[in-house]
Image 1 (cartoon, helix red, strand yellow):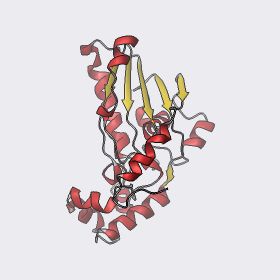
Image 2 (tube, helix red, strand yellow; image 1 turned 30 degrees about the vertical axis):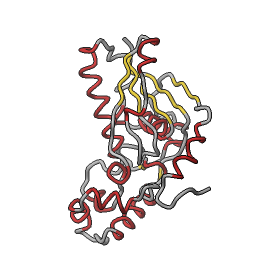
Image 3 (cartoon, rainbow, N blue to C red; image 1 turned 90 degrees about the vertical axis):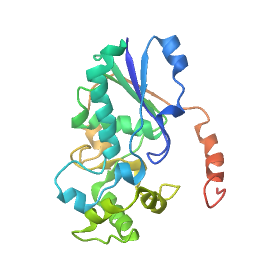
Length: 228
């Protein structure tokens, strides 16, 4: 059967795969749907000059998690009745933004054969801007901006990291995705699409009716209370 791998929304700092009930789609659409969780907020999208200096892919850890899931689907979905040669990736809101990133990511080539963009089109944050925010985050945590900053950051408990990140996703920016030059081209998404440097697969693009109606309720749950 065809396979859909769905990336949840939530600004890449909130949400979870089980927020979407895919049972109706699987029953009516004769399709296998895979949902997943991935690292969020600064745990999933932190850019920092110290991480860059280590020489490995960095910043877009959430995308790497998603690509690992796609690799698992490629290698294992046949055991569940799915066709590894007919995999469509899709997402809503920030999940849609992530789909765009995979379409231009050289690391995702061949892992999917179609794309669904639902309520989300943005541009990746320039690396310099994302790293500047990462430095601010490091300094706010008391890790400074020096050769020891990355080791210090890795020693901080997750609870402290999330507290400094904030419920509104103070860090990082642009819904997470960074034009890091390895996972996402340094030129960014728009330029990559304009140059033809993307996965040329069928695309379904749409919007979610009344999506923004959920935000007043979300704002009312923030620590600072309701806001405009």
